Amino acid sequence: MSNGDFLLARALTGSTDLPVPAAPLYPSLYWAAQHRRRLVEVYRERAGAAGELQLTFAEDLEIRMEALCRTWRSVSDPPAWGWIGLGPGRAQVEGARVVCSPHRCLWYAPGATEPHDLLAKPSPAVGEWERRDAPRTVEQIRERLPLRRAEDWLDDGQHLFPRLLAQRLAGEFCLVGAIGSPFWANYSLFGFTGLMENLHARPELLLEVAHRSLHNSLEHARALWEAGLRVIFIEECLSGSDLISPEDYRRFAWPFLRDLLAGLKQMGFLVIHYHCGGIEGRLELLAECAADALSFEESKKGFVIDLARIRREIGPEKVLLGNTDVVLVRDGTEAEITADQQRQYAEAGPRFIASTGSPLTLDTDPEKMSMLTRAARTLRG
View 1 (cartoon, rainbow, N blue to C red):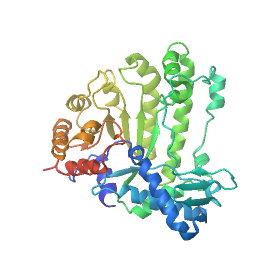
View 2 (tube, one colour; view 1 turned 30 degrees about the horizontal axis):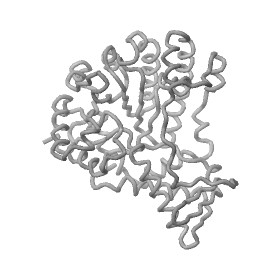
View 3 (tube, rainbow, N blue to C red; view 1 turned 135 degrees about the vertical axis):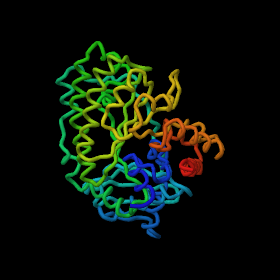
View 4 (tube, rainbow, N blue to C red; view 1 turned 90 degrees about the vertical axis):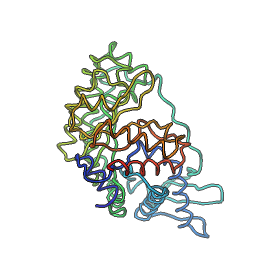
């Protein structure tokens, strides 16, 4: 291994004899627009003067890898990690057509007559306040959330993309898989209102979702392991002390999160857990969890996330990711970003990875990501 892969993996095991890696949260969100443009760029190069090509599975994987590599390497000092999932299956790609023109890049799925324009601006993500189609019974939840097996994600070559990408990068970036916690899965079924109301109105529904999601998350993780990923990021949102009580956290979120993290460690993963929201009544539990590293939001919305306090309460062993405010990264100078990293390092101690409390805003200059990486390199003195 070299560079990012080596740095991040060693840092997650608690090593402090190498430079501190930088790993800003949710890099795939930040890079999504550029990745889409790079993908079109490579398709156009392959199409040439003809402006059209018909794809094989192998050729499309090669194009996707090239686009991702160009995206990640587009900054002078890139971060240590890149987030990746499983790739497309053969049936999704083999025989697909791409038709390029100056202002459009049309993707025709195999056998399809209606294309998708890869240059079209995607619809903005909209949070679900209330799901009108939310399940109302345990039986409906079982229909909506069938229990799955790792093989369900691997039966058509989906493992090949991350495996081939790891070979191509040769350790340049640490490839990281990301999945949500069992409690967080309730949001997609019930929306925010339904989740909060069901904490007390229909608790059996939330518990059923969490039980089934725990099973499916572990099976999904097995698929990621088979695809060659060795680091995994677990996010949990809407379970912070700003939203639910310690009692509800201990009933609906913690048992399933605890078992998920323990199961991932048993598989062999290096595990990062990101807790979104307030931390009151949570730290004593998270200190005991199986995750190698903990990550927290920045202070906002009426709660304070203080790394010095977290370190005191969880002890010296776990690795802490920094929670630099993304507004500082976007608007600050390199000197200000470096000073913030030095402060956080002093608070968190040497088992530290430079990071952000939230995803980088999309209007952040890519060079600011390089500034965060360079600032991290100063921390060992």
